[in-house]
Each structure stands twice: as structure tokens, then as C-alpha cells.
Image (cartoon, rainbow, N blue to C red; front, side, top):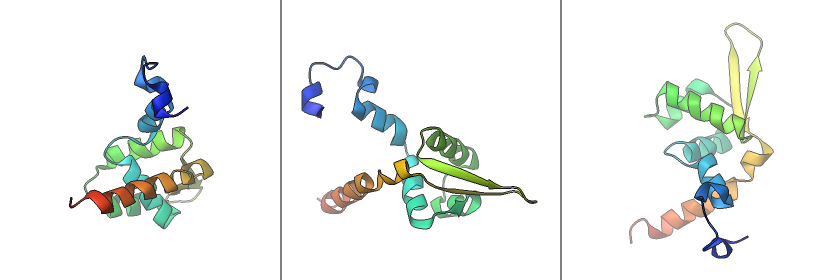
Length: 113
């Protein structure tokens, strides 16, 4: 169903595919995390943190857990000391890459207009 087909039928935006999508990738950092995982997978937590910069450890950890719960990110833990954990995109997460690419293209075309 397209957005036009939902017009007048929406009682709660969260009940729409658009609402679901925004709930999964919305916010300041989730799309950045997905993009960096696509460019650098697998990647360890601290390296991801270094590449993002201004994000707090707590926020990054929280967003990674949410993305994992939504099936977009997989976490692989190695049984060693010190513990080693790597993050990468799932197949479902990779299906978002064309969407993010489209958003980037839109930004290139419209950033300075």
C-alpha cells in the first residue's frame, strides 16, 4: 500500500509501514550506525564509536541492541579473554542500503539549494 492509499485511513502513524520504518531507523544515530556497518563490517564496538565520534557509549550500546532486536544487526561474541565482540549487518539490514543511498543522493542534490 502506498502512502497515498493510507490517506484518510491512518489512525496511528505507528500502524503504517512508514511508521514501522521510522521506528526502526529513526533518530539521530541509527542510520549512521547502519552506514558505518555497511562500510566496515565486521566492526568492533570501540572502532564503531571512534568512527562516529560524538555518540556516547551508552547511546551506541542502546542503539546496537535495538537494531539487533529489530533484526538489522548481528552481534558475534568470541569466547576469549579479553572479550571480543563484532557487529555486522544482517541480510535484512542490508536491504536498507538502497534506501540510505537514495537519502544520500537526495542530500547531495538538495543540500545547497
